[in-house]
Length: 374
Image (cartoon, rainbow, N blue to C red):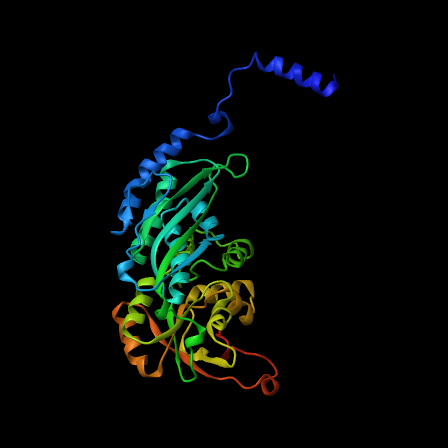
């Protein structure tokens, strides 16, 4: 018999003298998990729809797709997270808003193709389940679902001791929506002469936080609890401002006007995301002079000496969603969004693109005017 096996045998003999090991010894508490489920149940029940079957706690969420509503339904799905904005929430011990960010990142991707968000399932990974903290996270997710008009169909809370600190967590979600096949929106519907409408963001939303944190916290050494005059509140409060949920607004706009497509402005900025829905041969020509980015963008640019082009690549710069509509429907579109309290304005229009031979490159989005002067 090998020495390794002999050593193992000896170790096993020694273990008989130790007290029995339990799952709780490793840092996983089944009782805390059960309490967390009890605490989140009312929030999940708040975010529901008539099609939801059963209740929270089953092995699978059930959603009855009522096919009589659609003649040729197409399902759409999207998965996303919140990113390092969570570090701000954890530093401030404020956890009931980032769930709204999570929902916004998922459902506002769904609505780009015209899909109505139906339901969402979340995933929470944490070093140690703290029932109150998990409940706060689900409270925010529930609020986001209510704003989006979708159901919170359940999810998973996983405890990862040894991999994450006890107060650390990460969250993600998958959403499912539906759109009538002949009502799908997309690049193929965009035409020359269409008008590009911008919808105002509520700040940074959920992108660019690694750069924002580096500049404001590491370089500028600004405390999250410090009051910032330009914001009229603390830095932490500004950075935790929830992402605007545009889903219902976009669906209302598509119902009342002829929308060609939407573009959700997330990582990659305005140009990077809009060019995803502008077909080859066309160019969206935008005017930077039509809006002024919020003070938080100016603060980041100034304190970090971040170049304008880098700001526009990293942040939404004050525009969280873009709609491309027919020229005939511009006034009506702006009226619909204004009535829904969504800041909106004309950014530019779609034009035929010069040939690559003439222009020298394939530019789907062109921004005219000076970069924002910070």
